[in-house]
Image (cartoon, rainbow, N blue to C red; front, side):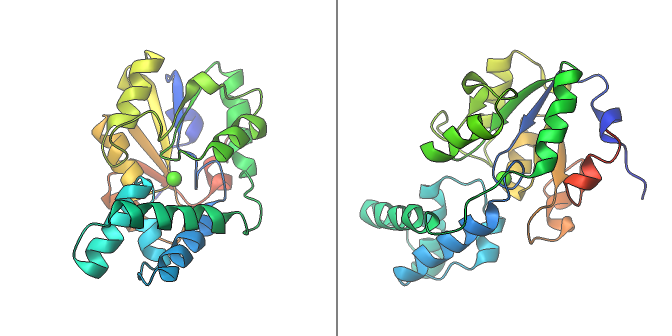
Length: 227
Ligand code: CA
């Protein structure tokens, strides 16, 4: 199957909405490890594949889902706090999370084409949001980030992407989304936005296509091949 080139897709677009983890950062392995070990510490089984399938959920929603599957009930507030604290603690012991080089290459291209850059992430951890401004200095500004702190309903709800449309003033046909995860794709598609998937994780392409991705690339090199 021959793919439409990214320059073609961007021809009449005014903005790109980027997801963060797994799109801008090679971070999902670290998050999956930290979640898996935090759950195991409290006797809950939640394998790595489940983390990838549910990437983009808020922490509370992820923990409730794991308790539903293990204990057939939601987690208590105390359990949510304990497990989320443990996950946050464990991720500090993992190797530094680094940006994908290809992300900056695309941002440089967008800047030259005068296409706006917005970030739409479920993450609410301050240290990652601060790193974003450092690592992509010159491309990203703080008022063009929608984080987990800004929304009531995380992905797969369309709220994060609808909020980005509202704040940016673009309509859905003027924008594309770049996502790596099923729930992120569902969220973007429910907001009516053309969604490009980049499969940086462990799930089959079919999972991302079944979630509604309009186009899928296997990695940043393939996505950037014509720019
Ligand atoms: Ca992601």
